[in-house]
Amino acid sequence: MWLGWKTIIGIPHDYFVSGYRDTTTNKLRLYSAVASDSFNIHIFNRGDYIKAVSDKIASENISKILYPSDEGADREKSCG
Image 1 (cartoon, rainbow, N blue to C red):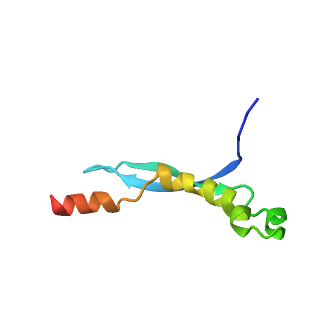
Image 2: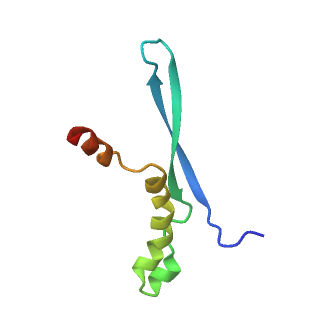
């Protein structure tokens, strides 16, 4: 029995990466998360818009955690 589960849709994004000094090209597949239910109309009709979209926001934040921004890495290279 599953407790506290949510359905999340994974959208694949393919990136082709060429080898260093080689003719080989490999495919790197990354996923972005999309909520299966984007909006709860019943909660919205009760007047709580934030709660109506909170599941969507929480589901899509998975992509931000798994694939963090590279901004910090660029700053470290330029400062060092």
